Length: 191
Image (cartoon, rainbow, N blue to C red; front, side):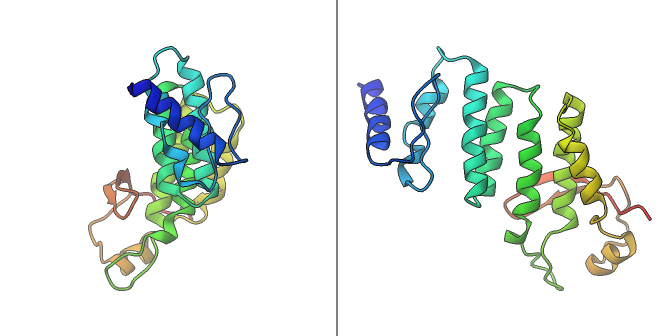
């Protein structure tokens, strides 16, 4: 009965939209603007008959669409699922980093002066891009992103002036709040 309900939800999801991905190669259908796009996804992920790379690729494809919709936390969560199925695949790490950078304006530091998380979001983004490099990003995208965003890292003196973090130094542990909720290491722009 449970399988029938999950299958029915998938059919319902596909029948109400023309934007659904074709159900081929074991991919779960996604719908860009339909609230039913999550219906039955847990069932798809729990299906032990599918190849883990198929699941990873489907999660990543779904994450790309969530990213395009500005759903950065959902994109990150789907990329983390993808990594769980294919830990040696660098693309999900790259997209997580891009989600942090794109979604940083959703986070406003509650302390005066109220500033968007900029350097802090870049720190966690760079963590992800460095993971992609360690895995072996053959596209070169992770390296390009690190090189490009290094110029936007906070200046040490300006950061300490803004946040009053007198004891904060390079490589200190730092927790990024808001939707990001990740530990990272402090990085400052190199002059």
